[in-house]
Image (cartoon, rainbow, N blue to C red; front, side, top):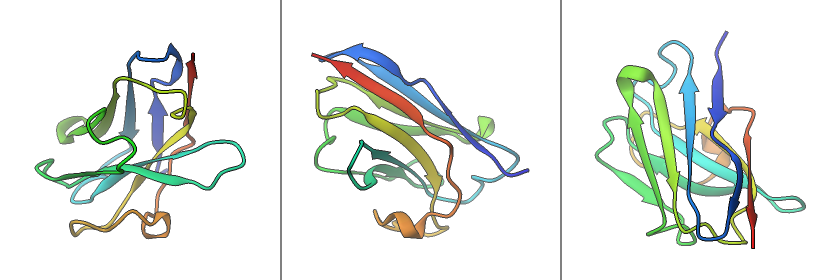
Length: 125
């Protein structure tokens, strides 16, 4: 069964850090861009970051640029999102998703096919 499983969410104080992980079953990520998205209550799902298959290219939403870093370990079929300097506007459910084989498949969620169940990030002020 094809699966993406996110982990690493939790409660952190503003200014703190969290590292999210997204583990894929089998070779689901092999050759594909992977992205992170987030969705806060009452808001639409928004793009956060994406990384190319080889890991040499990354793209970030302006709201997280300079604070978040996306990376991947293809040997472990895992993609990470290091979140530093967390702000009160960052809380959301964070999702990872598989994009396309080419770079850059974009920030539109409709271009991503497989999704994880999400992990909650909460930031206290």
